[in-house]
Length: 124
Image (cartoon, rainbow, N blue to C red; front, side, top):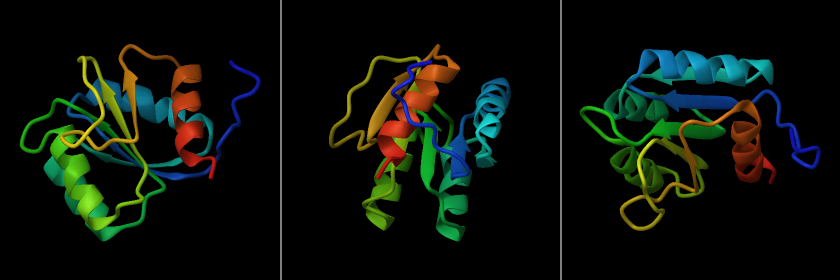
């Protein structure tokens, strides 16, 4: 692990991925740092959860049924413009108007990569 990366602990995170095994893998990594993880298996479910609670970070897959990650990010931005959003994907993508995520983490990733991406978004 990069010794310069600050360890962020105990945040409330909305984790969105339609693949159960991927959610379980990410949740296992997040709970190492005492994060509270609320899970959704698609963007529509995640949006409902987001409107009902506060989250320090939204971590979402890009390709999902019903509401994809880009559309989820757009909807969240309308409600909470400062909400940190980390897009997790196995596809080539860029941030922009159609994808307002703050950062993109490409699959496959490891614990150090996840922590580094989170630290950049949550340090302030």
